[in-house]
Image (cartoon, rainbow, N blue to C red):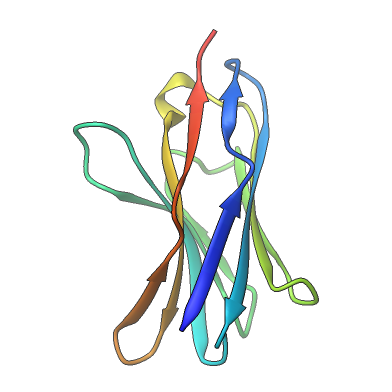
Length: 117
């Protein structure tokens, strides 16, 4: 089992910044990729960013390119999402995901991000 604990969400004004953290524990061996997803009311959950465990290669949704950065700290077993230039449309519950081969996915509890003046 892999446990994912998220933190860093909150209320921020448009143009502001937040950094989300996802701390992984348990049996993290075999995790191929980790990512951040988000879901706002009435919408489907969407992929925000991914980072591959072995290479550190990253991918981003077009809507966040140039504003968000996903990174990892191997010593702390933690993945981050730095969010800059936040917009109201970024408001959502953000979820951390870890994936292993064999169709094994693990999800965090989610953290609320609200962008509003």
